[in-house]
Length: 238
Image 1 (spheres, rainbow, N blue to C red):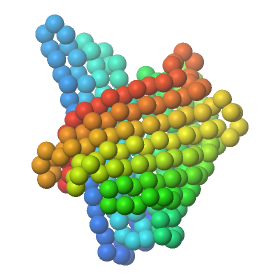
Image 2: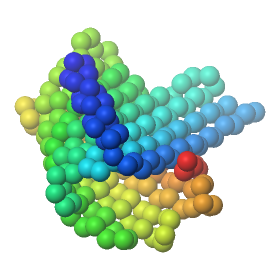
Image 3: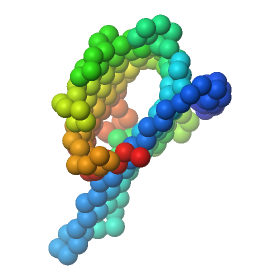
């Protein structure tokens, strides 16, 4: 928690510095809902948003998502994710980043996971229709599992790749993947993958399909290693 507080303090300081330059902001909100009644009673709701504030050489960003599901008044899905990040351009295509994140997924055995990370990002390919970004860094993690008392802390390396391809001027396909190996326990390896397809319906509204894979090679006792999540809904650009 103390490390996360330091990260958030650094992000706020970055915001103060960025505010002195001409800025650009981008905000997108996504919503999805499935509900049934009668012979079955099922409700599934997903929400996500992304926000970026650009004031060269700074880029401040935020991303959050939530998935909630219940069947016959019994909760069967309960996931929350939050990420706050600051990037500082060092040279053409190269930047330093710092971020703080929070995860909660009780049905995967995680009551809470805090993550603070820093490293270097490189835009290996930057074209009008293609953007490939490679990242490397280190992270500090604090995790509390279902049925376990105090949180455990561990340091991990981080390697990530993001590829975005514009299908036309507004529609795009994006793939993001990261590997987070524990620096002390080799079996404790997490891999996350997120695939997004966004197709516009109007100037402000798009249809979004997302597919997420989360792999934990050393999950909490009694839980599976891999979770797969498919979401659909609309995305609104504000």
